[in-house]
Amino acid sequence: MHRHHSLFLRGIKEARRILLTFFSDLHGCNQIRWCAPMGFSPCTDAGGRRKYYHFWDSVAEPESEHLILPSNKIVSMKLTEYPFDPSEFVEVAETTGNDNSAEQAEGQ
Image 1: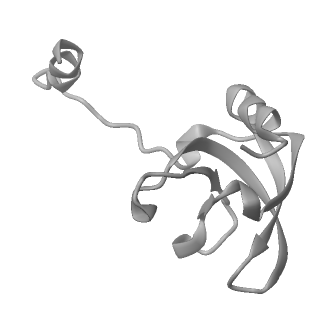
Image 2: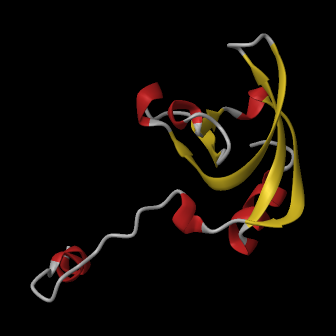
């Protein structure tokens, strides 16, 4: 885990953006982004063994708006006062009166 992990978790809980500085392999230097923290979990593309930090960069190009970083690529995280709305990056499933998928999931 990164030394600023607790700030990352606060950002999720309080829906506040993070000023993220990370090393970009693509650019070969540090990059700074205003991001919404999304979660800390294994990445299926990496075999699911290591945990990665997931961020949403709302001003990035559509193909690069989801940042997935291991802790060793993160230089710093600073919690800001700027809020984010999770609906910016999470699609809310619409349900109908006939949909019982939530009930089925609870029964498993």
